[in-house]
Amino acid sequence: QKEVEQNSGPLSVPEGAIASLNCTYSDRGSQSFFWYRQYSGKSPELIMFIYSNGDKEDGRFTAQLNKASQYVSLLIRDSQPSDSATYLCAGNNDMRFGAGTRLTVKP
Amino acid sequence: DTGVSQNPRHKITKRGQNVTFRCDPISEHNRLYWYRQTLGQGPEFLTYFQNEAQLEKSRLLSDRFSAERPKGSFSTLEIQRTEQGDSAMYLCASTRDQANYGYTFGSGTRLTVV
Image (cartoon, rainbow over all chains, first blue to last red):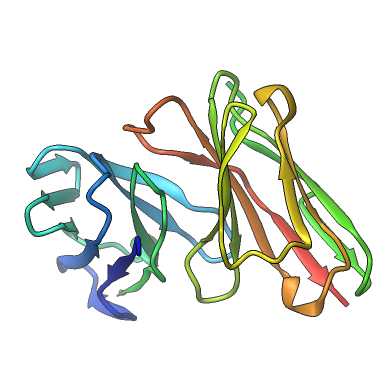
């Protein structure tokens, strides 16, 4: 059974804080993992991808991948109200999504 | 590169009618996925194509749903005898080759069955 599980939400953080989003997956066929951001009423938008174990940083976003543990995470530093959205993760092999984590950044 | 295009953007239909949605992927993208999304849920996988071949279809998908991708370009998703439970956003996404760099989603088609 190919599954993606994300930390249950909703997640609320104050503006300027670090938001931590987690995802575990069961499909070992995926080599790359993606984080999508979805604003209410909009379609998902790719914000990060990672294919090597370790960290990948892009601006305020850091993705972390641990293939042995089948775990991928996303850290958002200096969270802004505009980061308020649902965050979805998926692997490239089967592109299944979990329910997502709804993040609210409070001013 | 004009992105992934989906038409129509909105569709309202009466229960029991058939509807068809279209997805035009980014040119040269050979993988194409269809998803269904309801409020508060993540996108639910429906089916995917590698070029013109439909390689996988969700086991949960009713046989009222069918998808095609003639010539490996645009794709259509048809729902026959629509039910109120079919009301959802239908999303299409495409990518090239092994999708190492992610998929691009279209804006979706919102279906309302009344």
